[in-house]
Image (spheres, rainbow, N blue to C red):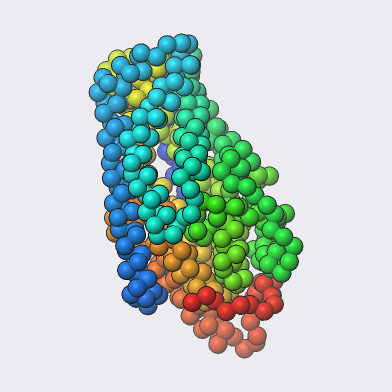
Length: 435
């Protein structure tokens, strides 16, 4: 087959596989009874709290948009004008050396262009108390992030160009398969190779909280060897938890700010949410979709690149890297609503799992309120949330909790006997929710 036919075959096969995995693994209707409208902000937060959140988030959001716009303009100028190719053409060495040098050069240019926005953002985070990280450690974290980006992008482009040089016709299928496999491998090793470079992790100590977390895991039918605590307080005062990895590298991580700042019932609500992800193997689902998305993207790139570059076998020369990065950036931006929309459905199901497992909507609502207050988050514009929001908003999540609480209360009132559906749920005294 010709290169173009291989490209079409790769694109169509990956697209069908992506749709099939999404249809199989994504919870398209995660809320029993349907998702309710969000609650009113003034029923959850005081006017002073809303004003403070708006004072921080409105400028922060505009800074983010400005940074994205500048980054996009720089990437497109380097990719769609001769400037980027000329810069990369000045590099010397073996082709694979020039690939990494080109990625480093372009990443440094992009980071320098957006660095003023990052500096202003960190200054405002210090001003509003979202972090107490000094400028030196902050700069180190920025350098680590840049290095990680260069290594990952360089490896992927090395495989892409290497396949195009080795398999002149079938490279879209070969590169798509290899890069898809690398995405799966990267997601698998990320918790053990990358996360320790940014945080130190310690097991949650024995005690009532650990015991109750293990009971929540049993209620959600999740095997849990350990719960890790990250020293996130050295970088942020916000609250968070997450699940990363899959199979033998899967881990549940709590920020140390969660453990120290929230009462036990709210911590258990967060853990139950993360265990919901573990129960449904959501990280594996996300990895599969990302791998198929990468393969789909390679097929699409092979179709578009000759039309833009207007010469055959354009991908063999490292000077094409600025154009490839520009096309990938555009593709990523345009596909964001799909990716984030799927993510919101997965996150909503984890919220529902948390509420059904703990049977404590009051703790869930109090926890969501505290997360929002610590992060000074507000309700984003609808278009921004549609395009960039990977999680439901705080007001949407609280509305779901209230609806499930009413459903649970109605079911309990209609039941002739005691409610024993949560026999394996956390037991023991619970502190009163904050606020």
